[in-house]
Image (tube, rainbow, N blue to C red):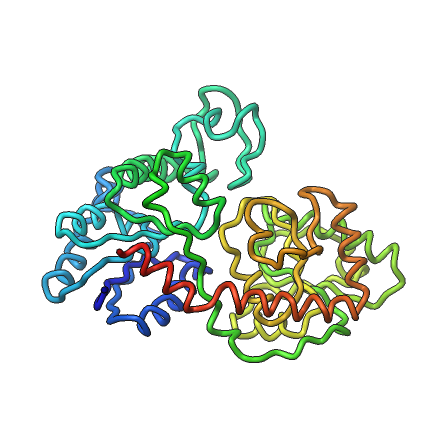
Length: 384
């Protein structure tokens, strides 16, 4: 039985879903045992010590903070929620050296993209990578994961290869957030006995009851305004939707990016920019449906769960594990990159009675299958 656990997380420079999940998981774990936490923060400016940390996959200052916590407290386990740079691989080695039960969570598919130095091993036959939308550029070309930086890409690949090697050794338990994640990790040579599926708990911000308005006059997109997230597909489909239907529906977009579309106002599209989480939740709670046209393999998209917890139906492509997060007979999905089918699904949601039925189904599904209790169960299994 675990009485105390140390939770370690590296915050992103721009606050994101994994940072929010950290807060929620800490809350849930606190109901199960005593929880301490360490949060590291990556910075924009590198110095010579940072470069050395990248090369050694070990950060002296971060390690000191971690060791001091172990010296001054007794923990039965260490749970690494996110490791990258400041929260480094040296921490894993220290945890194992102290004979602590060590758990790490994998949130995304970056390990599929950043484990090779050559682009032709990243994507085959110059296809676009499902996980990051990277386009291969020929044989023996460097795998430039970060398009703006060769150096940053090199360090990520260096880190990822060392990371996978550690996981293969078998003394670290891995939490994967979908069946697809577990399958991909097994393909890398990590023992299935050390991989546990652990869905993120429901967002605490949407535990309140929400009365779904099936007669709402607007749809919603939330995310980065880039091609990998399907924003251009969405705009083209919405334009066709407004052409073919004599309706008063609006499309509201929360997020930032470069949109050079002259027809935004003509086709009742409103770009709101970035919004604080509470405002985003409020806008979402009154929407007709969430549109999520991603082109990427996704982990457990937070925005989909926020929508479902509020009883908001979502329309999304059948890619990766997305269908795992919805009721078995869910119909509001389309084949990837099929804009005609995407349009058809939006048209189907013109039926308010149908939407009201779907709203109840998605809300009941997430409450039943992604509860705090199930998250705790998966954690307990991994710690045994």
